[in-house]
Image (cartoon, rainbow, N blue to C red; front, side, top):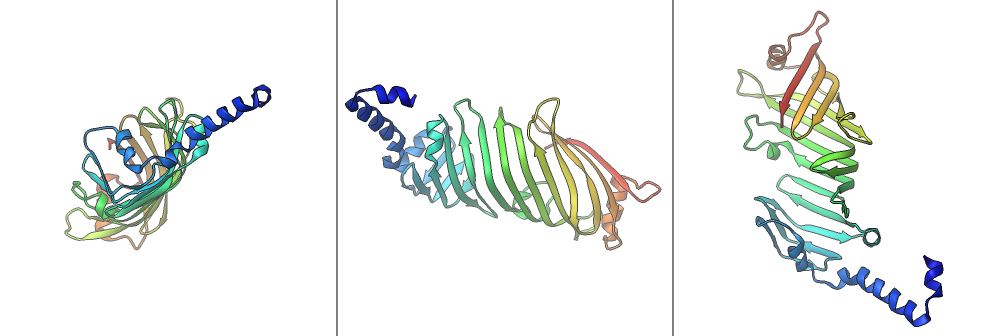
Length: 258
């Protein structure tokens, strides 16, 4: 390619290189409010836009009733040369925040990398039948999605200080700290999305797996052994869901939708 470029007349090379530079750096000159034109859907609102498409910000973003607060983005020019769009995004919402790299390819595939998500379980469970409390963090090394489902997922989900109401009691009990590790380089029907579940502290000794299947099914298979510090209501509820075997281990299996 470069050898052919050198063979072109000098003025032609200048025009060609200048044209490419103009197309690459055009986003740096375009105002950020043009982002509104690229956001699909009728239930999207963006206010307080500043800067440029290349390096911009918005005070408030609303998507189907979900509101993001102060949001900043910065385009990565190298992705434009390969036909994709990649940007670094920092944003937050009530009880949570996100920072990471987002990518959209010309094939329609979406990607997330080098991302961190923090959130309050109190906020996330608000309005759900089971209200829980605690903190959640998700670190995504790499994730690619096609047709609304991951095709690659290298990530770790951590839950700290999880508390939940206990059956037959008005008070919540500490359930513990847990991690789910996804090491799925390639996801398919033959290789479903599987995460390793472990406890990292608290009243329950737990290990097992969770399998996620499209469009919204999960299969949880874990072995749980209560510690002596476990609240009586917690052990009673566990016994009700999955009676212990002769060694005191509860094999909990759940198959449901999310």
